[in-house]
Image 1 (cartoon, one colour):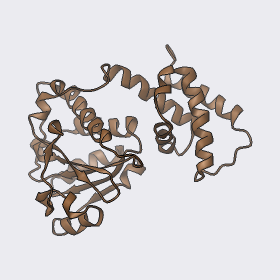
Image 2 (cartoon, rainbow, N blue to C red; image 1 turned 180 degrees about the horizontal axis):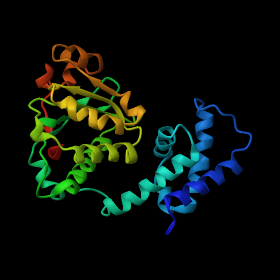
Image 3 (cartoon, rainbow, N blue to C red; image 1 turned 30 degrees about the horizontal axis):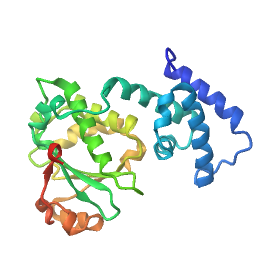
Image 4 (spheres, one colour; image 1 turned 120 degrees about the vertical axis):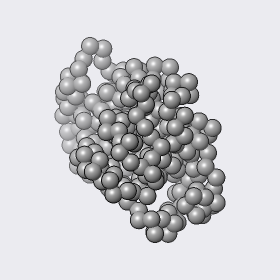
Length: 263
């Protein structure tokens, strides 16, 4: 893998797919087909990067599903992820000390689970301001810090999480296009098939101007998971997916909110 571009890696993935997958049925909905693809992809990944042996089949399957079971595209995506993980998170995890300025904004909380066991996080967009001290790099570390926290809470048998994006009090002073796009890129490129649903609530009209700028960068699969909720339908909408004892108190539930750094 060392010294090879993503394009070269993708080309090798394509060659491997053509030589090893002759005669396979093109049934993307088949568990047997997924297993064949996983085995095929794992063999090539381990050839390029021994670290890939540390990742289980479910992780590889998420990358495959993110690329519609296209082995060569999923392989290139995974190799890019491994390279990013080594450089961006060289110590294996992001510590609280690396995101102090972001944590000080008190904008992200861990919050129970939905009816299928997916952990929930609440993010207050109106509390986010461009971090002048740490810049966008610290914000990206904070995004990874939060995503890793969420993923660590996902129970066995489940692979996704739920996000409640609360825009109460959001104004142009909170607008951070670079930050939004960076967070979106991290989610889509390095945590594929992790987002189960994104509820966006308390949406001010002025936010839609920024939304129109961000929307084109959202992939189709992610778009399908986004739900804008009207204020008058908040509790009833949440209760379809979340039991009352797992719903935050601020939305009519019974669960107290826990800051992400205290979870």
